[in-house]
Image 1 (cartoon, helix red, strand yellow):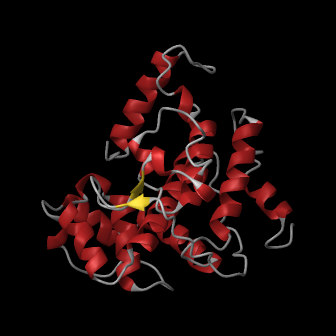
Image 2 (cartoon, rainbow, N blue to C red; image 1 turned 135 degrees about the vertical axis):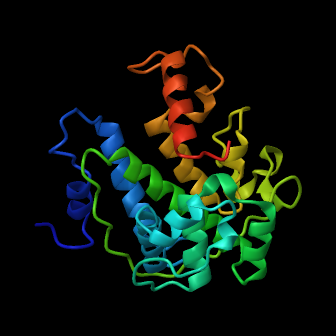
Length: 254
């Protein structure tokens, strides 16, 4: 068995050897990269905190409080404590569980209350990224065997807030493509097409870079999204049918 925290540990976690279907090597490589990213010190959270966020994102799928809230007309009407032993503050745990389990009913008033409750908007954006990334990994591996969470790496967050991020038109500050300069020059890959879902994470630029890699592995490269002729094993119309259905089942905000 690989020693905790090694590259061998990450390779073993997503080898999918027992899968009944072949898993492309670029997908396995991307998943190793994502797990390494999750366990590493981020921009505003430590590696240990990021792994704890990932654990809460995974636990939300089985949480009794989340299940009761989803049944309720208003999620705010159901009070209680989320399942599990939590190492993160309760307001952070609640935000992760809401984002993971009931994303279709997130609202601006909910977001404002989260920020007013003490969660900095920079930390919120990074939390959204880790939560979403973990959900994608787990959805992919549901029938293949979910990978164990990696051992966190030591180190301090970089605390880099990009100068080009500005308020306006969204819940959080964003970097417009025209303002992606300096350390953020590569942020959008130099393409003319920048989806809002990509810009939504730009207050924490490293999370945009990871989202682009996730899109490359699981869907199509961002620059190719407008191209109806781009295909892989499936033709593009088939890909869109699958993507639309899966997004609806997963309560994609879009």
